[in-house]
Image (cartoon, rainbow, N blue to C red):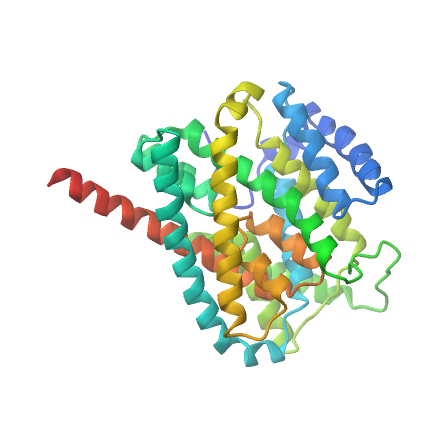
Length: 360
């Protein structure tokens, strides 16, 4: 029976930590991360494992990251981003209403334009094109797509190619044009902190994670942890700065998890839809750049922060890029959580409209 818990505390998931499939992930990921670091690639500990595990998956090898491990990594990532939240943040929140409205328009235009392209040039069925055109929310959309009896292979391939392109290209793009030293420093050591604060943060985070999962807030592992961190830090109840060394390990597992999504897929299956998925991704990126430009007219933010906020990447993957380049991770994360909420609201509404039209 499938376990749908956000943090799967059971014997099977703990046993998977010692499985051959996970051991192979580690054996592949560490050398590829070191090679990427030697080549001075941006986000080396993310891109190296992502590319190596993607190739390994497509070659037919069985690799898998236990959900309990991935959940722990995502909580650590949330705690790290949560450290950016302070009282000054509330002075900016009223501006975020405008950028959230721009996000809504961006999502609507993306679904309309990209789905029309996929229908006309790749012969995607209407529902399949809508699911494939959404700029994010792969996991929840796959569940909805299955319920709607759409072509799951087309939907999954379109989103996976989009994700790979975004998380591969964006670090190089930002690194080329944004002149800043990355904040991740493997020599940084955080000292003289009260460990009890970390225990309190984790405990309260777990409460909000389970609560957010219960009320169906997307990305509960990140949004719950950010909410808990924000409350505790703003009220001066608890704060804890995680060592940036920890982020390297988060990057490794997160990068490998992207590659593992290609399990049970073949090079032929991916290549068959690659061109149109690439064009669809390009359209989503161009629309995102337009949204970022419009947002820059109404809010005083670094343009790269805005570009990252409207890029159609995975919420956790984009969050680590924001952390790495110190591009307002809390602002970026907020907008990607909003993006997920909007997509999960908009797509069912569009499908309902289509169903009514076909019935008439």
